[in-house]
Image 1 (cartoon, rainbow, N blue to C red):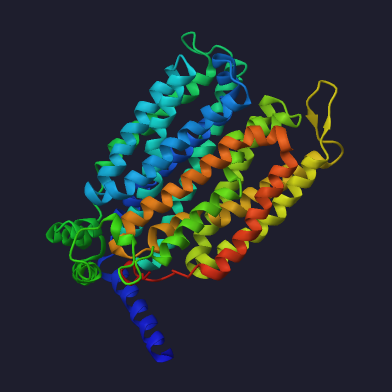
Image 2: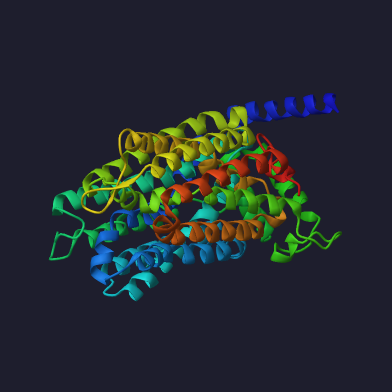
Length: 485
């Protein structure tokens, strides 16, 4: 067994050298990753733009804490539906076709959300945007995994999270600039419209660019083989890896699909021998759900509101969001350097431990909050500094691990036959967990309070450590056709 493992390692290294010398088209691979991850940017921007608009929404639509939660969480309803549909849709119309549909949804949502004259219309607009977010969130990682060589797949797939955080940070910066320019998010900016509306309209620009850029990249060869278009798949693989590697990959993809003589479908998720859901799907669902139960999107969606709740001004709260975004990008870049060297599972374990400790410190800081002279909460002494530092340490640990690694693993851990269907289910679970955390936060922040809320997030991070250690298998360096489950 040891000898066979060594031989497989030698064969893998020889294939890598052969590809690099003969056929690996690094320019095309870079283009593919760059375009696909614009979907990640839109995912981040559409998710993060809400962060600086909540004062405007509250004033325009006369919303309370529950109303804010519903308006903020509306995107997550669409995202869960979009993720579920996109997994199967990408098996029907292709990975690229699904991403193009997502781009159209982003564009339409941006225009409608900014123009909404009522809370109901705004919710509809955000649900439409959520459909695009959900579709992009599951399709882009799969597409990148299927278009890149195994020895580079981890770091290239991690670019999705870099772009998600770049989109979030871009939204934070745009919100800050527009609010500063207008004199506040509710102040009038151009053509008599308040700044918060322009925060939504601005995202129409990258949405349009995303659609145009998608026209320049090819369809996934694994999708093409599954649909019976082997000649087309071979041509794409030749462009990516060269003739020799293309022949080998077409044969491997064909063999991986040969056990089931039908096109991928949801029923493939049931093990035919046991009649039960495949264990690998439960692991994927667990990874997807734990990524949200640690509460990261509370920072992304409610960052400005959260910091204002403990005494920060709106201007300073928006600046704090930018700091968190910049640190997140730095952490994701570190992940790119590490993920194909030390593996996926070690990064998840490091992240779980780091988040559990930093979240516990945030909870302690919030537990010291007292009522200020104007009736709002204030963190006394050094508690504000502890909360700020710990929250940003938490963001760094998340983006060093669970942020990018979850998407990498979901894009590569499932066998070819069930990849689209498994992503549909895992993506749906991820967005449902996201919605549960995000919609509940405003009410939980009031009662039982911020401290208890963050204790719950810290507990989830601690539990995720043991979940990963017990169930997750390392996928570093393995070909997609070798995945089992």
